[in-house]
Amino acid sequence: MILVTGVSGSVGGAVLSELLRSESSVRGFYRSQDEANKALPKVETAIGDFADRASLDRALDGVETVFLVCSPIPQLVEFESNVIEACRASGVKRLVLNSAFGAGQYDKSFPAWHSVVEQRLKASGVPFTILRPESFMQNIVTYYSGTIRSEGAFYAAGGTSPLAFIDLRDIAAVAAACLTREGHTGATYTLTGSEALSYAEVAERISKLTGTTVRYVDLPPAKLRQSLLGLGMPAWQVEALIDLQAFYTAGPGTTISGDVAKVLGREPIPFDQFLHDYALSFAAEKTKA
Image (cartoon, rainbow, N blue to C red; front, side, top):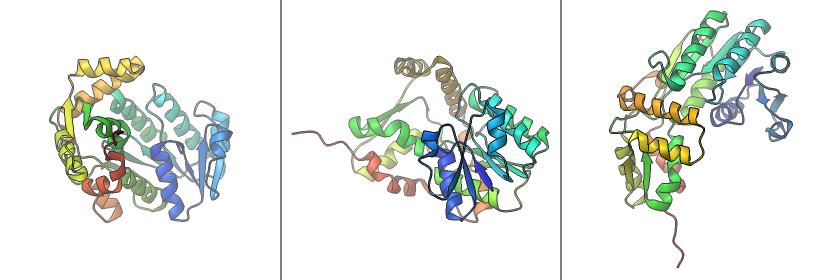
């Protein structure tokens, strides 16, 4: 039995779907009965909270393998450490951790939090595999497609530094392979796409896809901070994102990893394929006559 956490989120949900394709026995960890009621018929459900040890113990009953992912919140280290300890106590045979690109490199923001969790996992004695995905291609849809459709532009503080964006579907496929196949224990995989693109180059690719001009507008960090705070984002999250952007603009995202191909035996999904698959998300809004 495989327990998948974070199944209501993008990563956990994608991993769950990938495992179901392989006919694996899967249990999803949900935060409420309302969420559990939405589970697919083949999915066992467990309801609980990362802060509730008793609910973790119930969810782990009969489980041999765990996929661990937590939302990027201030309690991430505490919550994921709770799961690791519960896995250790229950005798889990394999834990696949969704960490972050830059963990072990950058001592601020989300990479720093994930680095602490990685060290605790390694010290726990639970057999593990660590995944460090680069920035998701799907985040371009989530965060930028609205203004791309309405204004023909998107805004960030990414400077000119390229990023080796990774398709979420590749992350899920790698995670599923590590959960169901031997040979990945003790490994740390950096998951990137096959090419590194700056945001300006992303705009060019979207322009080519849509046949309309899409601009990337680079924001100074102070302007981005002001904008995010104005949208009501919590100050801790704003500062974490600003720090993360500073890390990316320093240039580490240019590195192309071969780890997706190493695990899956194929190259990562190309960026242009991602754009093709999500083309409707970028189509310009039609103005009313």
